[in-house]
Length: 126
Image (cartoon, rainbow, N blue to C red; front, side):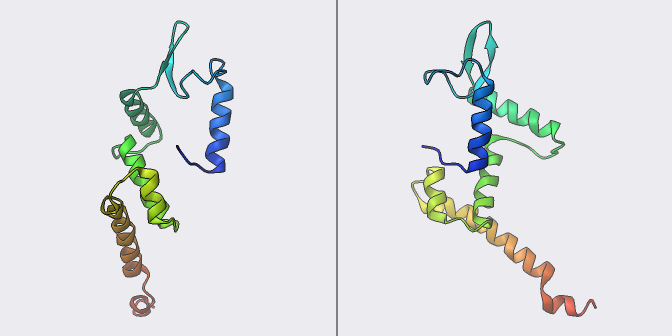
């Protein structure tokens, strides 16, 4: 089961409506391309290549992969106040320690922000 917000749901509905071959539940939700009339499901390799191409087209100079997107999602979830136990379930981690790695990244952001914007430290700059 995959949970997502309203904006993602709307985008997914638009995508599926744009595909003339997506009128049955048996067809894959995400396809690579049409080879003649056959619809080929998007593979892991195809997804990795697609995300890499889209990242380059967007001007992203760092590596862009499914794992990077998953990591970005996890850290953003926690930065926005999401519950770590819900995140654990969504990511499919059986051990909370794995999910806590993302929490340490979010906490590092807080420490950096504290160093950068500390009112006490900024008093000397005025």
